[in-house]
Structure formats: structure tokens, C-alpha cells
Image 1 (tube, rainbow, N blue to C red):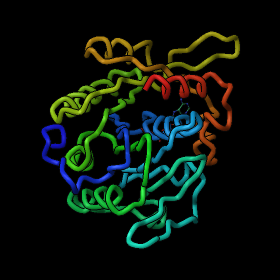
Image 2 (cartoon, rainbow, N blue to C red):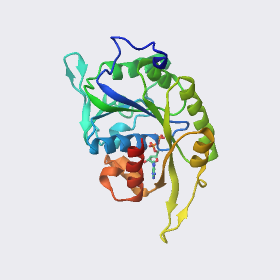
Image 3 (cartoon, rainbow, N blue to C red):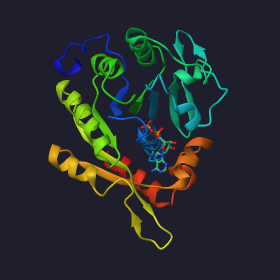
Length: 258
Ligand code: ADP
């Protein structure tokens, strides 16, 4: 593993990248991609040079979330040029294959695809390269931490016990491979009712309690808002489409905490 020094040396990829951030979750559907996208866009808006790798090969969401449906990355020399939108350099398997085609790869193929995203794409100089990981603790996560020195992992969960049970596994995986955990983000924390009160649909403060119990930083709580999903579907990240909404402010604040 990189943290134990095995991936140092002259051939180390991503030499021009200052920080490598892995956005991870125990379960799917908790909003990991949404957080990764809004994090990347917020960092870019703050003036940083940012890249985003869609490492969720089996369920790539980046093309839809950035509204890039037909653009294809081009080669320049031996390297693939990432696409770019909202100031973020992007790579996704969804740019290379038809979006409705299922990726049915065994672990080694998925691992080599991730390695290619790291070494064969012209990332250049970046302040942050964000990885939107698949949910869980599989081959892709391991490949990432064994290929590059990950600066830290951001863990996304919803407040329910079922989600938190799987988050424990993700947390323990990052501990085992010596990747620091930057903190936990709780998504879908509440829904604001028309009278302004909050309905804690999935229970209250599950993420915060979990973070405290595990000794992790709690980076923020993001409410459920209709527009978050609509923004993702229409290719306009929420922090750009509706910057003054509660969720967008929470997403931005989380990015700055990170
Ligand atoms: P994951 O990457 O964990 O599978 P996604 O980011 O794809 O999750 O989110 C799952 C779905 O939930 C998407 O349709 C997304 O737009 C929606 N979603 C995520 N966060 C919120 C939120 N705070 N409010 C409303 N919808 C959300």
C-alpha cells in the first residue's frame, strides 16, 4: 500500500496532484455521487484546480450529473484528455461506452480500468483529484489505495441504522489500509415542511452520533430537497443551479470543511 511506501518512487502516477480525495459510502443511493460532484464543483468555484474520476464503474453517474451525454474524450499524444465542465476535469467510463450498456467486468478488469483513469489521462497539475467510489469495500477501493497515495476519505451516509451499519465497514477498511478519514457527511438528514419545521424522515442525528462514537469529524448535514435530485438529473450541480438554497449552502460548507 502507498501508505507503507510501496507505491513511491519515480513511476508514481499523479505527481502533479496535491490532494487525492476519495468519496465513499457503505451503501448505494445515499448521495455519494451527489456529494462528490458538488464537492468538486465547490472547490473549483473557490479557485482550486480540480479533477473528478467516476470510479463507480458499474453505475457511473458523472455524465448525467454534468449533462455530458454525447461528448467523448480525445487523445492527445499518448494521453486521454479529460472532459471539462464547471471548471472540473472529468473522466467516467460513461464517456467511453454507451450509458445504457452494462459493465459486466470481473474485479481485475475493473481494477485495470481505474488504473488507466489514473495513469493514461492527462490530469496535469491539480489541487484536488476527487474519486467518486462505488459503494462498499471492493476491488476498486483497494486498487485506488494501492495505486496512489490517497490524502483522505470522505464518508457519506444517511441517518438510518441500515446505512450506518455498512458505513462501519467502509470506515474499518480505510483504517486497515491507513487512509486518513477526513470526516463523515450525513445526507438526506431532514425534509423541511411548508411551515418551516423539520421532518427527520430517516431518524435524527444518526450520522453525528456515529461520527462521535467512531472518533470521526462530522462535516455536515444536508437536507433532502427536491431540487438536489432535479439538478443532478438535468446536469446542473445544485451548488451552481441553486446556490442560495439550504442544501446547496450545506454542500458548499461541507466542501470547505473538507
Ligand atoms: P449514490 O452515489 O450514493 O448511489 P446518488 O448521489 O446517486 O447516490 O443519489 C441517489 C439519488 O438521490 C439521486 O437521484 C440523487 O439526485 C438523490 N439525492 C441525493 N441527495 C439528495 C438530497 N439531499 N435531496 C434530494 N435528493 C437527493
